[in-house]
Structure formats: structure tokens, C-alpha cells
Image (tube, rainbow, N blue to C red):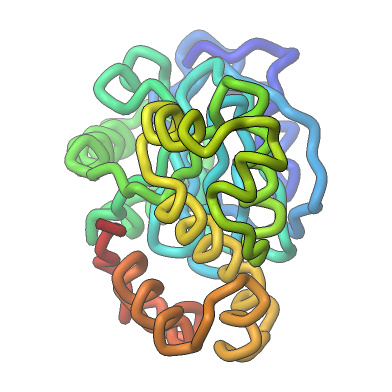
Length: 282
């Protein structure tokens, strides 16, 4: 496990933090290390990177992962993946409960080379939770290594979920993307957004899809769905959340949410088992 002393090891909420930091620097540290996650996330965080790949899966709460290449919200029952050496910041809106796993750089090779959301195979979560209960004195044991190997076998079968919002490199397109992410309820049309950013409508239409991999309408809807998770996590009503993020009516919001997350918004945070096999957005 290649981790340097200056790396930001993401175990601030774990009582074994100092011991883990020390053990991770040892040459015989395991290739897969799981830790239970229970902490209050801030709304602002400094970017950092580490030599190991990192996974997050939440049972409760919501975290947002900000990276130079895009932004995604990591809701329960989906796995957030951050490749080795990739700059990122993990932010809230509050208390989260789940697990995080560090994976040796060499073992991360079969996984995407950019941050994404992955599906969570049924046995992946209990495997991570079991690994997280094994304290460092069990590291290196045959049992620990077997569990780690099975965990990786299941992880490699996970599929990418298209709920990430890529950030365009063109400053004018980036300006529009940031607006849609920060204020998804903005109702300006494509031509109006183009004029606001100093583009012609034709230029926006021609370059947006190639820069983000989706249409402007799809980008806006994905942003609204991801933003809505914050309101739901805070306990706001489905109707209130739908209006806050810019859906014209509640039924269209519920339909889009179900298609993206495999559950209705009203059940998403209250009955996690109902959406363990969440479907992806088309």
C-alpha cells in the first residue's frame, strides 16, 4: 500500500486514526483496507489526494465529491470511486454513516481512471463492513486476505452509473455548467444561457454535448436530481424539493428520480433496502 506521510488519510472520524496512519506506512500493509465511516461533513473542504484508490459507500446521509474533472453526489447504496493521485474534496451536507476502503494503486488498474459512481453489488457492502471490523492485528492474516480478494472480485463487477456532471474545459461552457450545478432551478433556455456566457446558440449546441457527453437538458436534469438529494436528506417534503430544484411539477420529479435511483424520492432515505439495486439514468 503506497501511502506517504503527507497524504491526507481520510479517517478523521475514526478513533484508530493515529494507529492507522502508522500502520499504513509499513511495507507489509494490506492491499485493501476498510474503515467504518461515521462523521459530520463540512460544506467546504480542502482538496487533497492520496496514492491509494478510495471507495465510499453510505448507509445514511449524502456527500458530494468535487474534482477538477467533474462533480458527483454520492448517495446511499452507490459506490463513489476516486482513483489514486486524483485531486478531490469531500463535502457534506452533514452526518454520514457507511464505510470507506483504500485500495493499493496496482489493484486499482481495472477500475475507471477518473472519479465515478459505481453500482453496489449485493455482497460488496457486507464484505466491506466485515473487513472494517478487523483491527490492524488481523491485517496480513489468511482470513483477511481472502476477504480482501473476494471484495475485489465483486468490486470489479460493479458498473458505472451515469450520474456524474463533467466540467467542460472551455471557460464559457464551464460558466454555464457551474450555474446549472449551483442553481439548477434557473429557468433560462439554452439560447439565453448562451447569450449570458458570450456564446452564440449555435456554438453552445455544437460544443456542449462533446464537452460533457450529454445534452444541455440532460445535464440540467441530472443537476436537479443530484441537488434534490440534499433537500431530501434534510427532511424536506418531496413537493418542496421538486420546486426548489426547478421541476415544473411533482409527478415529473418523481418519475425522473425513480428512473435515476430506482426508488421514489419519498422512500430513498427512509428505506435503503428498497433501492439496493438502483438503476442508472438512461
